[in-house]
Image (cartoon, rainbow, N blue to C red; front, side, top):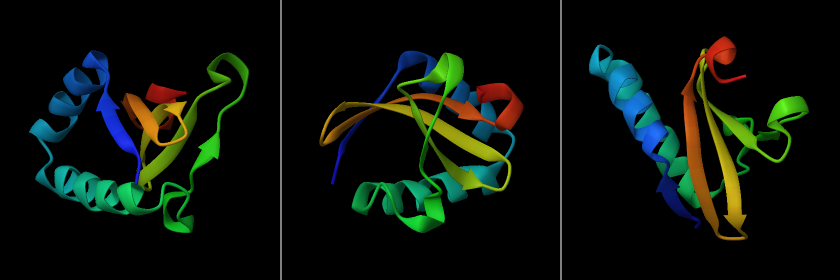
Length: 89
């Protein structure tokens, strides 16, 4: 179970994203519960990023929403960004 921290930019974008979408908020928290138990669960589609985002990872909240994060330690992650594919990549 990793310790999860939220970057200040992530907090700001998260609030803006879920403000008009209660469904996204609910989906996010369901996926968060799964991520806390098993960050590499197949349903999350957790994967390494490449190119300018090398060193970062991402997982899917739903078909169109991704969370970008960084491992700070083996059991500690920092959430960096949330949004659709074009917004975060």
